[in-house]
Image (cartoon, rainbow, N blue to C red; front, side, top):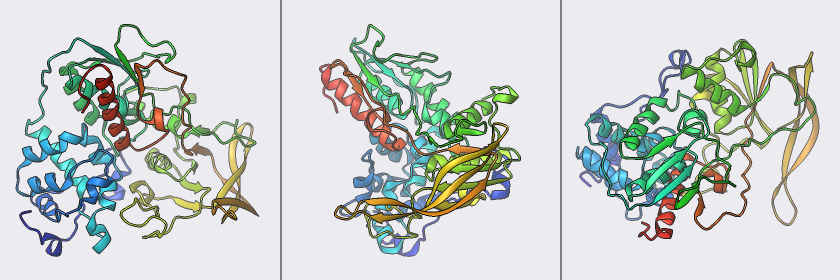
Length: 449
């Protein structure tokens, strides 16, 4: 490293978010960027540890010490080349990854100020596009064809890797746009869709064929391909089957999020079909990232108030002995959407929805406690009898997704991403897509990795 003691003199500096009063008025990306000089200084904080736990924690096996060193010395192209060896889409992960690498950084352990790996990654890929380092390439073809079903992060990574290995790749997407979760599940204020389109143009120029509006029955896959990869994600959301669920005003989170992204893309919807939080008291049920996205979207739509409830207990603040370093810490997370204004509550179970004239007006909830089960220590929910009604005009169910079930497939059919594991992180889906491509290549007589 050029400056092995920089972490002693250079404090961690995050780019931060746009001011709240400004960002809630639009769906532009909330995160800002640092100038080139400050970004190099942040890269200099990397200690080049003898055991790079950042590399260990990254599902993609990224090499932060190597690309941080290149970035610090101003070798942007080299930094991009190192980064792209392990990550097909740093422009996605650099924006929306929770940065498992940073939580395992030695500086996180010692001074609670890890290297800004995620932001540095985003800066590198943006410089690569800006400086023209990324250009379509031609790859020799091997005469074999592979179909990828689904164009989310796993499908895109699978297609990209197979295309580079010489296969003719066709991606089938059921929706009208390519991108899957990236396109329809993640709000624009976290990932501008022009970022997706920019990458798709490169992939198309390199030979990947995308077919949209293709609803493929995985039991009857299209003919003419040597292998297939199922990357259809987790399309079925977990429902809340309590009295009153059928009332108007209760929606799955993805119904709202995908519709809002479509509206921003120029589509229109009849008034009666529009899911709009304007002037409403919104209740978000579920405390994960999807729930957070619902909060930010509701605020931008003009909600009167937003309340988020979670059935699990409030996570510890700062540190959690149950998940010590270098593991991913299960602690209280405050997102940019939370900062924008919402009430957060934990340990609440929803008993029923209350309404008038078929329209939801409230949710009856009960406080619950979690106690360890004798013998196993597994947490068991215990109702307390303390009940109340939360006033609401709109309910958004953000309680996760059900792992899909698959039939028995022929040996030339592979499964990758959330379709195989259940809902996970975008970075894990990209890693799964890369592995699936290697497995398909090996199956068809190639060398895999």
